[in-house]
Structures are given as C-alpha cells and as structure tokens.
Length: 104
Image (tube, rainbow, N blue to C red; front, side, top):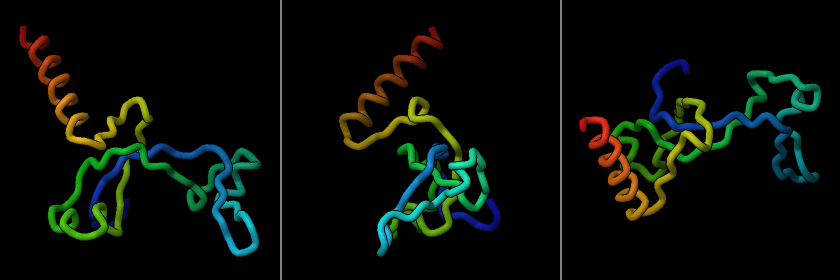
C-alpha cells in the first residue's frame, strides 16, 4: 500500500476467474486465472465485511471508505459482519463473556 490511504478494509482474494458486464457481454477481469497465474494487476478481491480503520473526515463523507483503500486479507470465518444494532450488541456480549472467563 503506497501513499496515504483513507481506510483499511478486510478482503479475500478471488482465486477464480471474475467477469464484469460490458457492452458486448461479459468481460474477463483476470484472464491469467485460466492459466493458474495470479498477476498483481489482475488480482480481484471481495469485501468480507470489515472496515478496520477509517479517518473520521472520510467516514463523514458520502463514500464511507474513501477513494484510497488499504486492505488486509481475511477469511469470511475470521470476519464478523455487523449489519444491525442487535448483532453489534450480541458481539459485545460475547466479547464480555470471553473476557470475563479469561480474567476468572
């Protein structure tokens, strides 16, 4: 990650061929994958749901993560997606129970 970044998110590298819609049908984004090659410029990543760090000024903008995004590779199992207040409260309760057991 060169230069200044606005945020850090969790991603998982896609190791299969990825396509996008184009004017003439599907366009292959990472053709090296058909030859079991992983070129840096062809690497595609999917968001696993974690925003690990973001500058306050960036978070207040319309685009939550900003334009310059850093990343950490993390599996779906290691990433907790919080999409509602109830999930957030449950995750805090679970963390408190784990921390309480450690201190006992």
